[in-house]
Length: 211
Length: 211
Image 1 (cartoon, one colour):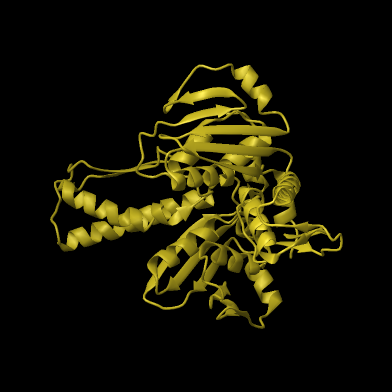
Image 2 (cartoon, chains in turn green, brown):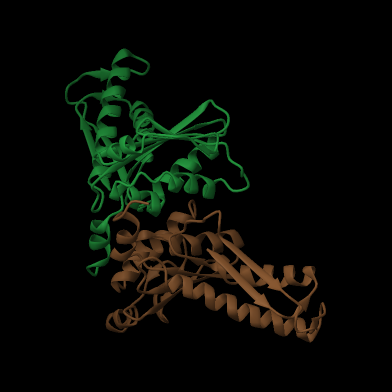
C-alpha cells in the first residue's frame, strides 16, 4: 500500500505528524485483508502551504483538519478492505472488555481467521467459528464468559448459546457488510477491525499465476 | 480432531503420559491446516495391558515403544495435513536460529500465511512471501539477516537475494511436498511446522455450504 494525502494548508511538521499518527491508528491500523503486512505499507501526508492558511496547534482549524483527515483515511482504509483481493463482503469486528491486549488479540484473531473469513464469504451464520477464534487467541481463559452478537442478533451470552431467530441472522449475514460484536469480561476498553472475506477470488489472485 | 491410539502393552500411567507428551509435541503440535485450534483437538493413548508385556520406565522397551509411538503420531499428523481441507500440496518449514521464541514465531507465521499457502498451492516459487511472513512476525528486527532455501535451492543469504536456477526452483515447488529452510541470526535452536496449502477446495469446503 502506498497512500499519499495532499493539502494546501500550512502545517508545522509536528502538527502534521500528530494528526497523521492519530488518524492512521484509527484507519489503516484497523483493517486486515489477509493479515499480511508489507514493508512498503506507507501513508504520507504532504502539506504545501500553498493556500496560505496556517493551521496552528490546538486551534479549531487543527481540530477540523484532523476530522477531515480522519474521515478521509477511514474511507480509504475501508475501500481497501472492500477492494481486498477477491473480496465480496466486508466484516467489522468490535471487541469490548477490561484487558486491552486481550481485546486486541481477540479482534485480530477473528479478523484473520480463515474459518471466519470463509463463513463471511459464504454468508454462513456460523457463530461457533467466532467463539473458536476468540478462544484460540486467549489461551488459558476457559471457560470464557464471552458475549457474541452478529448484526445485532445476540447468539451467545456469558459463553452460552442463547435462542435466536435463525432466519433473521441468515438474512443479516447475507448482506454486503456484517458486524460482529464481542464482549469479554470486564469493561473500559474497545477496539474494532474491518476485514475482507476469503473467497475463490483470493485463491485465484494469489495462487493461479506466478509472480 | 479426535485421535485414539491403543496398545496391549502394560504401562504405568506416568510412562504413558511421558511418552504421549513427548511424541505429541513432535507430531500434532507441529502441524497446521489453517492455524485454527479446536477445543475438541484430542489425543488419547489407551494401554490395555492385555499382552502382559510390562514396559518399565527407562527400559529399552520404553525407548522402543516411544519410537513406535513417535513414528505413528508423526505419520497420522502428516496425513492430517495432507488431507487438510482441499489440500493438494504439503509444505514443511524448518527454522533455525539463536532465539527460541523467534524461531517458533517465524515458523508459525510462514505456515499460517495465506500468501505462502496460496503460493504453495499454485506451485509459485515466490520466496518474497516467505521473507515477508518472517519479517512481519519478527517486528523491530529490520534489517533481518535471514537465509532462505526452498527445496535445497538457496534464494536468499543474510537478507539479500542471491542468483539461483529459476527453472530448477519452479520444478521443485511443483511437487507434492515443498521444504522451506530458514536461517535466522544465531544458532542452537530449530523447529519445524508441516502445513497444508490454501486452494479453491478450502474455500469450497468452508464457504459454499451452511454449517
